Image (cartoon, rainbow, N blue to C red):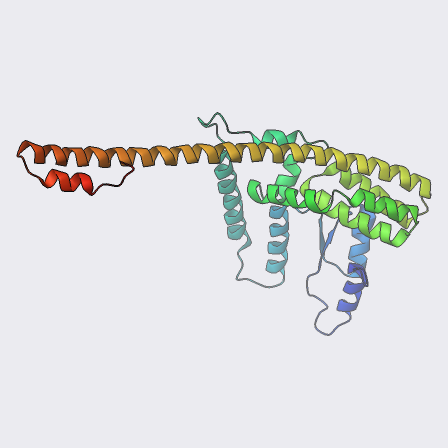
Length: 284
């Protein structure tokens, strides 16, 4: 892509010597029966639909590694390890998300679930239920793709069908992976419309809806970022106060120790008391 698609690449690979039986797996956003048949006809052995669910991808790889004669891989054992890893990761996430005594904490999951057009479970599943990487990618999506609707609109106004299709395809893919389902579906319609005979006006209307959906995501994720910044600021302030308190406590202990030493000197009329006093910093 875009010079050669997977179907043509597979046909050419199958013509190469000793590559007739090498497993080739399609990874496609289309899971319709005709698409699967087209992949099979080109010489592919199997397919994985996008957005990719990690455990399904692992299982597919294990299936074909084993079938291809790699007896080193015991698919059942590896699969059990992968599923255990997934359960442990999920348990760890739940533990981190358990209620705390910190009244200033905020529920990131609740805020993200409220974002219009975002399927939180779907997106999190694509990252194997790892919350931190998922939020990091959502933040990258927020930075990189929010203006894609306006970019598409400019292309539609110039009726640049190939460029429209390519940009819509890319937006569809990343949106599907992250669970931004409304944008994914609208991007798919624009891609297919640009490849087909959809009128410029119809593409324009779809793009207007897409821009609205992206704007909804933008507002929702901005609310999350505002809340995260507020929480981080309060936490930093509390940490500063705790540090200052610990410093004050340390100074208090030192002063008590100095006064005790002076008192002992005075009780025996020892002039060393003067030396102790003169040796202390002016802040005391």
